[in-house]
Image 1 (tube, rainbow, N blue to C red):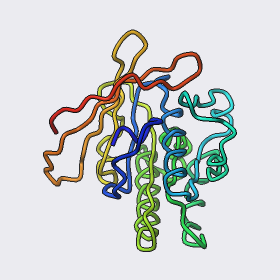
Image 2 (cartoon, rainbow, N blue to C red):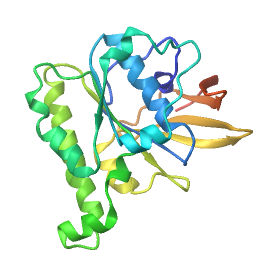
Image 3 (spheres, rainbow, N blue to C red):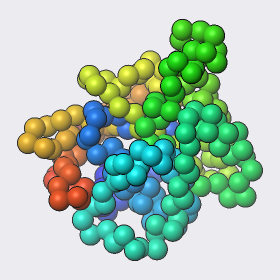
Length: 230
């Protein structure tokens, strides 16, 4: 499934995991990977993709495209940007999700965890763990909206978050709602490794793929994809 984040032939298009998480350290190109995912989804389905993010953060660090992807390509017209400032903006979007005449094929949320400001969430819920509560309630709303959409047509939700250690922060929260986690780790010499981890509990022994990539000369560059046992 890692090939979905790169400009390569898409051979794994089945709708097995509608809710996914991309987690990686700071400055590893997560937004660029998300944007390429959005482009691939729009291109392969000729359907609408909603990209939710902070305008300020996106303008400060815009995503890089893969080599060979034309920035004037008509596919980009199918990617609609939705700018929000906090978790309330995300909740309002998904609360009205059922009003779409035709559901998007994918919704992408960049830096999901950063929309939950700790002090604001603590004050709102009157609880020192207010941020956790806010994330749980928002993930539940996102999950219900995507499940509802999938009764009509395939619809994916891809979130991204930043981790500073070996695993995503608040992994215990994400695992309840997310069946597949894509994790990025530094590989040295400016390269990164992207792997997927299935948390669906299916016990599948399918082979997994690992993508090695880098950000070079303002491009997202896929160096190689290796296959290993699940």
